[in-house]
Image 1 (cartoon, helix red, strand yellow):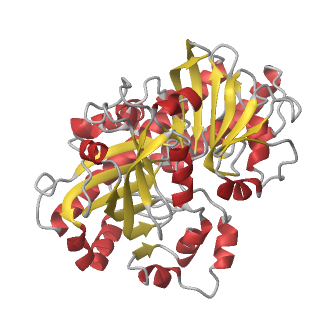
Image 2 (cartoon, one colour):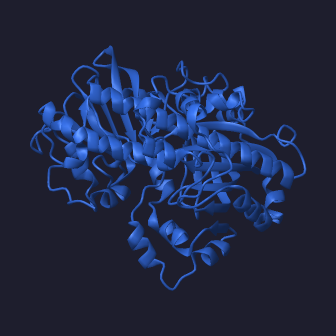
Image 3 (cartoon, rainbow, N blue to C red):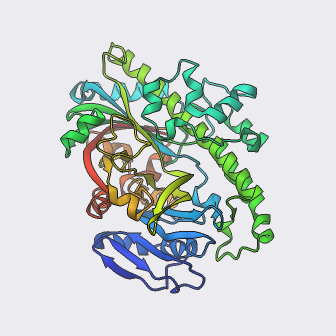
Length: 485
């Protein structure tokens, strides 16, 4: 998991720590880590802090190499990392996006009382487990190949509008409208296309989930009303990404960019930071393929949401409109996007990498849907399956300090192997049931890997970004039932 950090770390305030530029050879900018004092010991225990410093050495990085309080070790960049690069002098790196391109979260709200769901909870979870394809390599009922796959990669969730599988309201409540411009289906390999042919509309495995939740507490009544959240109601959260297609796009790009590093004379402190200039042929090729995979992921979550709407309508003997099933928002947390940000008093176009970090655009931003424009972007933060998830609203300070970014979840403290070891002799399913939470998974190992103890305290992570002024708390969601691969 990488070496522990041996460089200099200074406390800036109650929620920020600085790695000064120069404290590690080659750093071009500071590293800044958002973490409260209760969280910093966990942050320092792995190799992620050294990765923050490594990212600060990359050409054309702007501002600082940033990390959110859910930071933990990842491939090249830390998970929980944010880095913005100048378009002319900077680079784009697959390690700054991750293997699961556009892994993200979608939240559905309903008018269904959570008490109604709780009375039939095991039946509801079992029905979701039957209806939602889950597990490693599992395919679904939708197959996209040839021209339909090219259109899906080019248009993302918007392609599903013509298929009757999405609505304009869904797209309006999705980051970037569920479609990134500049996607290049021709940059996606045949291997990736084959892997993705039958996986759009499937959940996958690992930390991906569908979770039935109760809106337990409202903190900001006006923001909650704008987002359609009401205490005591049932909500459903979906967490998944671009499946095997996105993983293959990342694999292909890493192989391709190894040659680019030598071609452009880029010196790297870690070979996992392979990259290319943003505007180079290799950089454009990766961005085109990455955008296509991101579009695939938005279509994937759209199909899952459509299936879940149908399941809820049948289960509760109603229809989606009568039951008030509507999308709150869908947001990515593994992506690189070209955005305009103010740096040193002037607007600059930057390539912003968010890996295990959520976009957080403040009130009034032009990219926000009309319903939420006055309160700020909904920020969806899943916790572990035994505690809670949060809905936050982005604040102005995020744009000034973090290129409009915040945390994405609780963040792991145990590796998957360590979590499985820690679960020996225990039944995670029974432990959750004792808390009133029904869990279904393809395997005992799947639940063991994702047990609550494998993650940081979600309340502490959220409190850190709120105290730092990046977001405001809107609502707390309590898990009722969860399905996993």
